[in-house]
Image 1 (tube, rainbow, N blue to C red):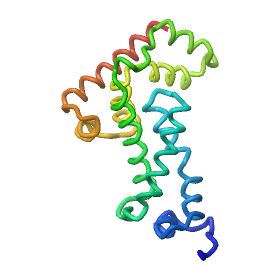
Image 2: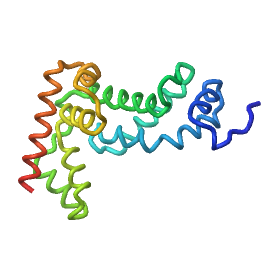
Image 3: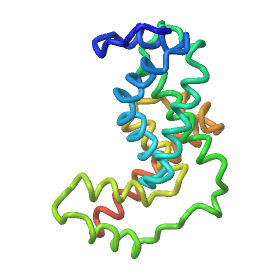
Image 4: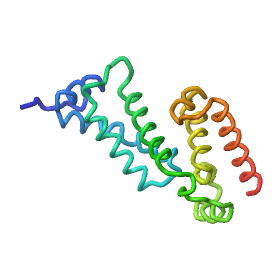
Length: 181
């Protein structure tokens, strides 16, 4: 029987305990890291909260299954973040471009109208969500997550030049929509 888990344990200690099958330790990991995992996935999949919720759950399931492979060379939060980004990118890759929802300017304007007027952050998030999936993924990973074009090209299976082009496309589309608003 495992010992009670103190909420004051550091991530490395919790990870060690979880790797030995301690579900209570993993629950503490889940509770302290869920919001960040969910948020990064939500930004990459375009604000589709139900899908982001599913992918966050899958991320933590994978984390539980792979906890014994976690090496404390990097922070647990970094490892979980990478699992989350990979889950979101695999989801984007799994859906064909033709099946992805096309959000035209009219739909984008309608969504923006439902947001609190004047709330710049919500308006920007709606605009980002309306970007084509690959352009959105590159923008989120480069501008919000701080990835390099080399890392993005490897994760999305595209050339570095394509990553740069997608970033330029995303920024141009955002600028156009912002100026039109």
